[in-house]
Image (tube, rainbow, N blue to C red; front, side, top):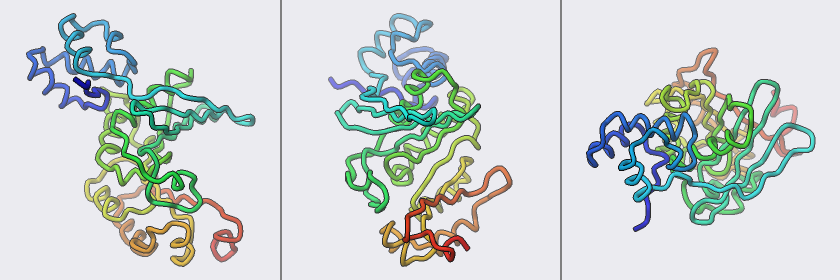
Length: 272
């Protein structure tokens, strides 16, 4: 029997699992703490669980979703790019960037991507599958074990379009933010989208507390459509109109991302 992946379970799901299998409810929070607060990479590391629960978990679940395949170090900055291999042999990348007292981790949300932004190497790969909530979180846990500096910021800006994997991304962000989980401040979690308008609307309607970033990259629809084809469906005006409903304040402003492309989107008129 193929084991299920337990990393990615939220606290409610762990309570249900314990209840259905006649384990005390408080064990759910212990498992939750081991996975997310302590970053356990093996079920055997959960030292304060009783033997019968450990046996049940080992027989039915696996906890590690990723293996480190390769680490590439920057020659000029304290930055590492980590290539991970998933359990089904797919490859994804994460980036760990340390600058003074900030440690920012950029994580992937999909294997590949089907948005096909022309300046992005991931688009050439095409889309394979979404990452689970556990796969999102495991990137952070494994980087925590690789680096001495505590992670201060997480950005969903790696491979894939986070808003095309909306439910798993939001679920993982909630675990990152949960005081019983990784206890990362809401303003230290940023989710980036190329402009998936229905999900931007849902994100705003749900009043998600995390920072929102829009990969804009052009100031006219003619240019943006060339480099981000989904602009044909959801153009700049439609996106900006929706952002008028975003509950922004000084601590929570929408970030507009802009990759400068020579002679494409870098004119004086673009800047103005």
